[in-house]
Image (cartoon, rainbow, N blue to C red; front, side, top):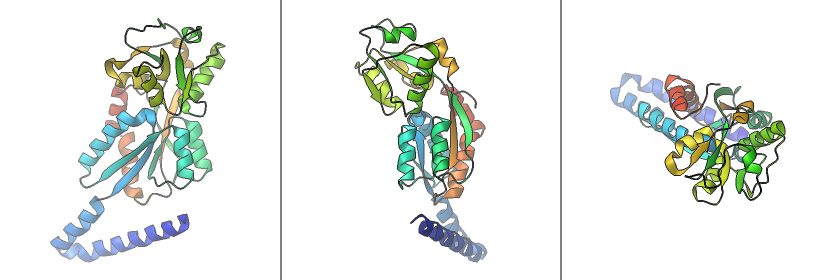
Amino acid sequence: MRRLRTAVVGVVAAASLLLAGCGAGSSGETDTATETVGTQSITVFAAASLQSTFTELGRRFEQQNPGTTVAFSFGGSSSLVTQLDQGAHGDVFASADTANMTKAVQAGLPAASPVNFATNILTIAVPPGNPAHIASFADLARPGVKVVVCAPQVPCGTATRKIEDATGIGLTPVSEESSVTDVLGKVVTGQADAGLVYVTDTAGAGDTVVAVPFPEAERVVNTYPIAVLKESENADTAGRFVAFVLGKEGRRVLSDAGFGAP
């Protein structure tokens, strides 16, 4: 099926070039060809922690590329890789860690080598007023503290495990979530005393949560890679979106959201 779709894409691309060449002598035909090229749409599979930032980047990209539509599928990076490997349509994949991007590469999903575009670290999110009086990572292990973390296969869960190993402090979470946004949601709705999320998540949550930084987080830095997918039917537009994320404006938006440079 993938080979057939690739062949069809090649035929469509060749036909588009032929039509563009034939229409060069007429302004009316040229406008039609330009409109066809301009109405490209892409689907970006991106880590849940990128939701706010990539939504903004998508909006700006559409403004600068009239007629282009950017749709998103956000979720845990491990879940996104599984979906793509099982045939889900996507044009770009952005992971919250290199491990899941490596899985994508091993599955033959990216069209070229991924490029790192951001970094992130964990912080503790607590409800306003910090009723459980959480002041350190060790406090999360106190008896009676309801802490929520990401599942081990999710990048934020992997980072949590690494911090536990580095500090020798084991947590007993009341829940392990499939994405970092689900962890944040548990804290926001009062279902948890604390949750381990990224610094960018607390920054984007406004006054619904309070961040409690802890120095051990600096030991585990998540690096975010991005790549155009081999099965993209609009590889040119997908490539331009990736370039936009890597460019000055993309880096500025990421920085403003709290992401570090790769």
